Picture 1 (cartoon, rainbow, N blue to C red):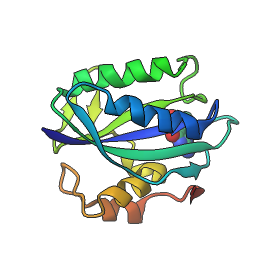
Picture 2 (tube, rainbow, N blue to C red):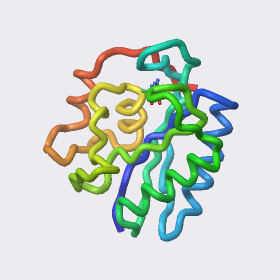
Picture 3 (cartoon, rainbow, N blue to C red):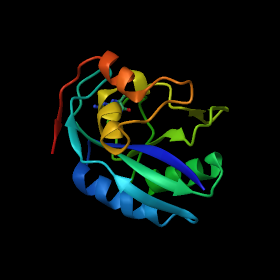
Length: 158
Ligand code: ROI
């Protein structure tokens, strides 16, 4: 059994409902359980162009799936939620990112874990710290030190 953390984000088509429904779908993935979910946050979009604010959250899962099978299951849920992969960094109905997979470091064509953008995203770090304030990254960096160094971006708890 591996504890992993998933980032959830949506900024289209009722983001709050997207995240609630995504959590239910994740809990139905075989040999996988949602053990905790963070509060939801409203967050200013990061990246180029104009787009609506996001709702972001983090979920803690226990799974017996290998990382790439978990990725398959998460991508199927994104697709069920009407995700269209058109523009990179564009608005999306549902984004599910594997942030951490136990203390593993993975680097394949499809998957880099820990998620490489964790340190620059307060919409990931803040909800992750709600769930696991004492977490230490696989490279030994405490989550709290990432939080202290993270750039500011408008974020408020819903
Ligand atoms: N910006 C915010 N605030 N939240 C996200 O989940 C998010 N996801 C993305 C990009 C477009 C980079 N910006 C984001 O993929």
